[in-house]
Image 1 (tube, rainbow, N blue to C red):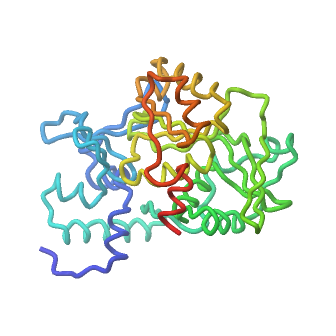
Image 2: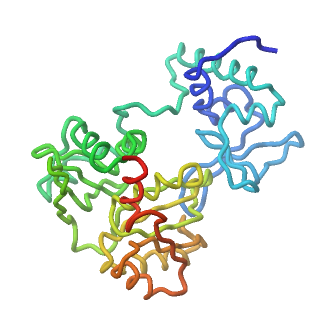
Amino acid sequence: MSARHFTNEEKDKARAANLVQMLKDCYPDEISERKNDKSNRDFWLRIGADGEEDWNTFLHENGYYDQKEGKLHNAVDYLMNFHGMSFPDAVEELLQYQDNATGSGTDQSNSIVSEPQKTDAAAVSQKQVEPIGLVKAKDNQKVITYLCQTRKIPSEMINRLIDEGLIWQEAEHGNVVFSTKDGIPIVMYSVDVDGKPHKRSLNADSKQRYWHCEEPLPNGNISEVYVTESVFDAISFFELSGEQRCGYMCVSMGGVDNTWVIDNLLERLKDPHDQLYDAHMTIATHNDEAGNTCASKYLDISRIVPDIGRSWSEMLWRLLR
């Protein structure tokens, strides 16, 4: 048994280990790779002691999802629950694995950094942005400061959305741009010091694009869809959901008049080839006259309103101010 005492940083590092890669490298007989026909995404299943795939345990880079519990566990939990290790032994094994992987030039940690490296989704080509006259800034510092200080959105969430290419800083004025996962800008807010953002809709002629953030289940599907009004409401609801947001998609309508977004999502729920197929939808508009009027048009859809304030962004702001 390990007699080591670990710092909080070491414990967090172990929990953030890339479980899928660790199993591939150290326990290849415990992992099975599959592809989701709906989303065309790869996902992984645990292989039990009987050699059969365990469809209750979906493996993920950040841990594993227990279908029965409806909860995402980390890499330390995996070694404790499936290998019978103590907490110190699990932490030590994962730290040793990460150190060896780092020595070989491979980073096996999923921790968030202040300025994440660009993913394919985040690397929006200049050709995509040019038609609306926007150019990406070299960094996102002004946007991070604005969203943290004015909107009270935690830096970890901001960095995550930047890393996924969903928000970025416009070069000329430092405005914040919200884009789809395929790099199409949807809406831009000016980052004024008076704290009153000025909105400019982009690609408004298309009724096939709307901003959203998501955390799919390990198999790539979405189980819960929440329809909010603004991009800030969508982010705030996503943040407020905490650990429960595995399987969530939070969508911004861009205003209560854009009910076509709800209609579009309802169609997607019926498509067996869509990642939203058979998901549950909830309308999460503002707790005011306009939000209530919008929700009243869809009485057969669930409704949820903030416990504090009028909107989800106001609720997050009040809780974190």
